[in-house]
Amino acid sequence: MPPIELGPTRPVGATDARTVRSSGGQVQQGGQSTTAPAALVRSEALDPGEAPVDAERVTAIRKAVEQGNYPLVPAKIADAIIAAGLLLRVNT
Image (cartoon, rainbow, N blue to C red; front, side, top):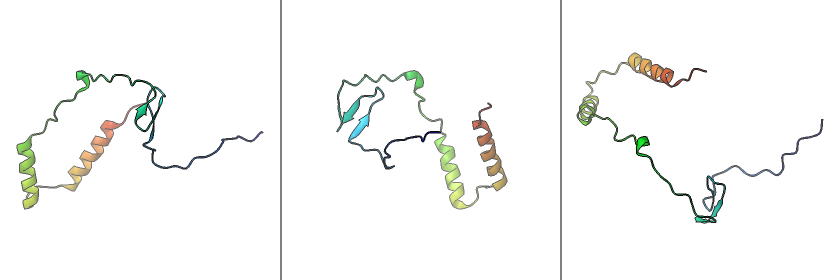
């Protein structure tokens, strides 16, 4: 079997900010594009809006934790973590 040639290797590291490749494949040098960038259109359908947070409840829980009278039950916390992990699984 003939050997597989991979070519020269490059060091692994952070991306060079001076050279950026756009989604269209054009190379941008130093922030200047060789072609005009495509217009970015944001859809309001994808806007999640504000997070549904009850600020008063958060304040009450923080105060209870600081005072030491908020019931932290490790078994309930572990069950919630496991349940959240199961919800994220995809059946394949």
